[in-house]
Image (cartoon, rainbow, N blue to C red; front, side):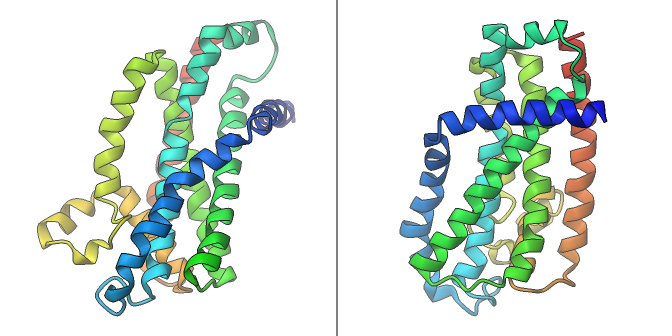
Length: 253
C-alpha cells in the first residue's frame, strides 16, 4: 500500500507540473498535425495497395500515434536531468518515499500525457481527414500505446540517470530513435519495402507495435501482430522498469 501511495504522490506532482505548462501538450501535437495535414493527403492514391487495405487514414493515423508515443516518451529524460541539477532528486534522499515509485509515478504521468494527445489526434483526424473510427478496436489499441509509452518513459528516465547531461542524452536518444522509427513502418507500411528491409524490421519490436495498432484500429483482433506486440513490448517494459528502478535506487540511496 505504501508503494501505491508513494506512486500516486509522485504521479500527482508530475501531472501538476504538466498542467502548469499546458503548452507542452500543444507542442507535442504540432509535429503529428503537420504530418496529418501535409503528408496524409499524399496517401489517398495508395488505398487498396499492400498495407493500405483498411484505408489511407486508417493505416496512417495508428502509425502516427506510435510515432507520437515514441518521441513524446523518449525525451522525457531531459526534465529529470533538470531536476537532478536543481537538487530535487537529492532532496528526496531524506524522504521515506519508495525508490521504485519515483520512477513509476513519473512514467505514468508520461503515459497519461501520451494518451490524452493520442485521443486529441484521433478526433482531429476524424474531423480533418474523415478518419473512420472503430472505438472497440481503438480502446484495445490504447493498450499497445500505454505499453509503448511506459517502456520508453522508463528507458528515457533510466538513461538520464546514467548520463546526467542533456548534451550527451540528445545525440544518444536520436541515434537510437531514428532507425527504430524508420524500421517500424510508421510513415509507410513495411509491406511496401523490399524483402531485405522487411527482414531487418522483423527484429524491431516497434514494427510489431505499429502493425498491432493498425490491426486493432481496423478491428482485426486476431492478427498475430497483436500478441507479438504485447509479448515484445510488454517484456521490454518489465525489463526496462527493473533496470531504471535500480538506477533510481542507487541515485537516491
